[in-house]
Length: 170
Image (cartoon, rainbow, N blue to C red; front, side):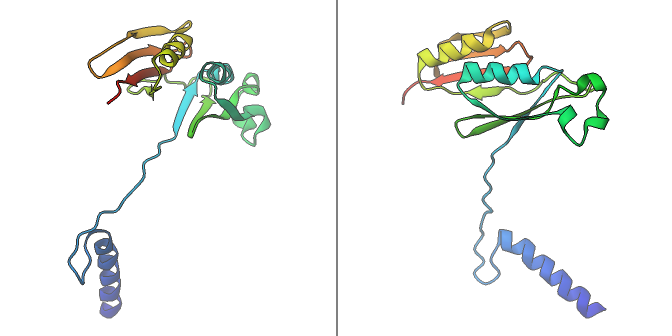
């Protein structure tokens, strides 16, 4: 039993060490991880309208939409929720936004984050900002700053916060 425990302990120690230090050379290595967060947005019954709005404003594409009533989870939602969205995917460039309508009584308004858009063209930044500000709340008007040609913050009509940063050329 002691022999097996020592072998298992050595195997675990070797695995830990392989991520940090090579036993033979003593060289320290760093594990490289790519961070590609997928943003999941929660809505209070407005996911479909929001994603169609984003499709128009951002020139992206709603790639997938599954309604509560069409899913194996239909029994978990009230009957009036069958047309609401269980899962949706919106693609713009190489970025994907996920969305869903939270079940009644479980929706929580977004807080503590914003989706950062970084157009390179000031005119495109203006267009996008004003499009997403439609029926929304401008938190910081679009303006020039010491680091950006355009910077502004808006919460759209669906309660989603957006930050715009059109950087100055180097």
